[in-house]
Image (cartoon, rainbow, N blue to C red; front, top):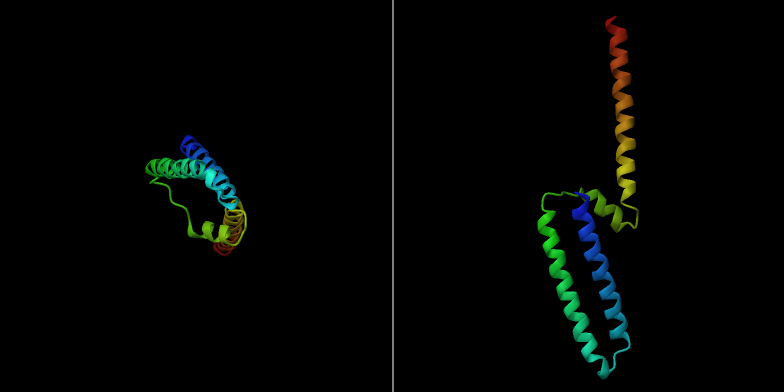
Length: 107
């Protein structure tokens, strides 16, 4: 499973780097850099195709919408997992307390 994510991560990193380089080319564009611009655009198209191929391998993965909300808020998405575990632990303790109370009442 991790191999699928590693492969996607590798393609995304290459894509982001190509976008960064494209930004540099465009911000200081000279007519002589036209060939480099075309080449970089072709790399970007190829990168998008590679990412799309990875999508087919990950079609069964679902991501909770709350994770995207964390990202939109500039928060670390790993905090979502931590907070979910903390909520589950708190709920578990609450239910355990209710069970213990019921045991005492029934005894």
